[in-house]
Image (cartoon, rainbow, N blue to C red; front, side, top):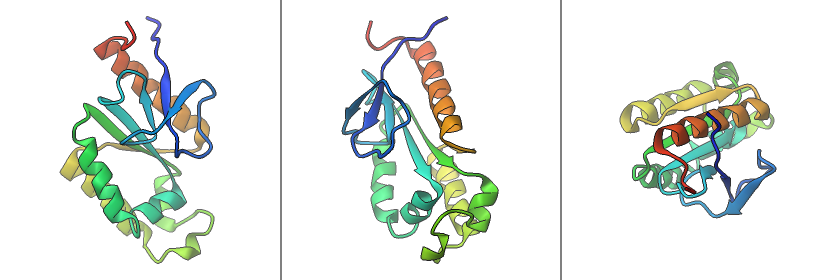
Length: 147
């Protein structure tokens, strides 16, 4: 079954993944489905952004987590591996004092406390593929929002 929808990209998302998307400010996350912005959203983080967000930006991110509770589905996609996280293998990692195991522990806590799934991907191409599969499944389950 062909799934048809339009992806919405948050206007603050630098270097978006999708060529054909609507650019608008999203209240939660970086990507959603046009017509379902109030039901599904995906947050995408590079490893450096993840460390920054879960350390100095933790209060702002907690507010986003609270807003995500009104959605049917919210997930976090992290570009990098668990090993990259644990060993702090990313550009400019020396700028953060946070330990990798602490960041990973915070992610696990977010999952257990708020039921937010998180996925590690190798690169942008894998992130794009995962987002499309999550959106495809959501639309198959809930119907095309534009019909």
